[in-house]
Length: 211
Ligand code: GTP
Image (cartoon, rainbow, N blue to C red; front, top):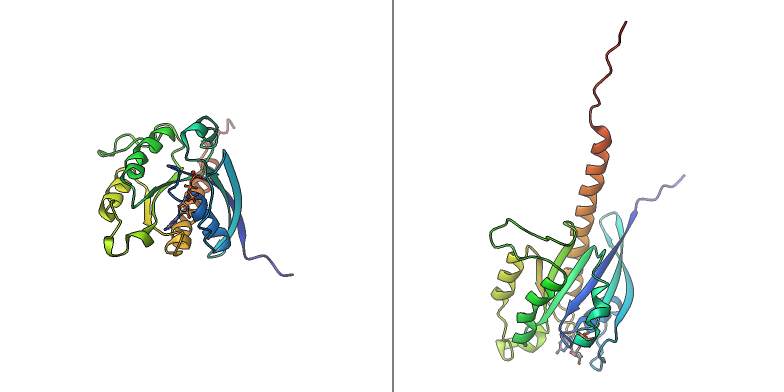
């Protein structure tokens, strides 16, 4: 009988970031490999599913696209809970969207950790965070770039996050950044499963026989 070589994992990934940074465009590019320049602002929250394969594992990513606009904040907040992964996006041509990454981190309750003492105080320790600087196509020749790649990298280091620059328009680093997140999600889950198995492996002191 033929046995299935693959196992399947399902992860919830929530996208946050200022309005207009390109969250919907990124998800659209990732799921449909196309770019629609006339996207309108997300109302509340949208949802899409994308399946990818990493080695012998099929990974189902549930992608939650939240609205960046302030007026939807009370709705979008509810979606951070129980996220396996969070993508915090900024636009490399917008200083304000980069500055706001820290505010987004606060609202998903991830603490920056310059001295590596306190980290992810209020979200699950295994939540994977990824910072993405989008719209690199507009920064070619550094014409419209206002956020340097190094500053993005430094911020990601501070929050112990994955980091990529990408472009929903050109398609650069779309698959790569999501594959990196999926890979880490899988590794972290493997670690958890391993830990859970070892709990049952703990040597139990044998009762002494009274004979
Ligand atoms: P909200 O739904 O309001 O939170 O916005 P959003 O973050 O989902 O942004 P959206 O994907 O709607 O994109 C906003 C605008 O930026 C649109 O006009 C997109 O066409 C444009 N855009 C998105 N990604 C890129 C990119 O990589 N390059 C360029 N040049 N434009 C982009």
